Length: 160
Image (cartoon, rainbow, N blue to C red):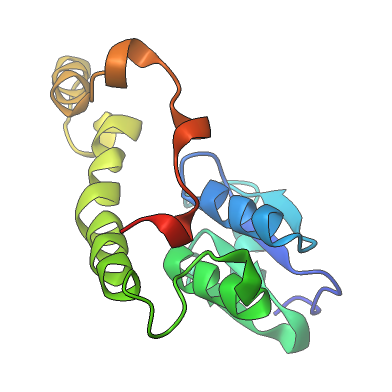
């Protein structure tokens, strides 16, 4: 294991789900160091990742006393515990808490895994044509002509 960082250290990479963790820390106003690693076997940063998280999972959050937290949802819960006023997760007793758990579990277990088909189609099919076809099938058309509606989205605590 690597020495424990003074500031939490997030090991992640583009496309591995670490952006949601970075956003959670930013919304909570908490400090976070970020280090990009390639978790693929044989990559030059694989040993660095394994030194922090022997399971080789990303994103991985290195905490004080050498603790490591993996899984995006677990890390978001951790951030919410550190800064509950941020409203990342509805408070206990709120009418929105059970629907939040239902939808966040659905997103993590049913929706997010489908992104891997489009991210790396070669992992799932053996040839370039098959990869291209899989990418076409998995493609989601842009919402409303590709316009960005993120400024209109409610804060997580307001989602029913």
